[in-house]
Length: 116
Image (spheres, rainbow, N blue to C red):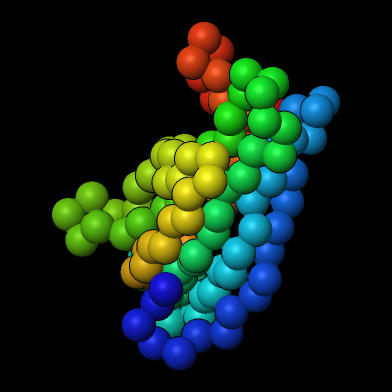
């Protein structure tokens, strides 16, 4: 989580896969810290867990994140969807100065990869 004392919110949600078996739950926090290149920035972090509530169905869960980060060399760039936790695991991350943070929980199989 962010090193500073930032407000934390409980967040949770299910995948959009028709079975609704993939679930994420935990804490997310951010605090606006200023701006870079005309956009507000925040110090953000989270501690979230991914769950697969339908054991034996051949699917797992993947918690993913996407955000924009500032680099003095290249300006704002997008960190595309990246898996940060798999079924039964918890991810704790301090993102530092970012904007447009998005989280999603997805179904996963070895054959199809991430979906829903």
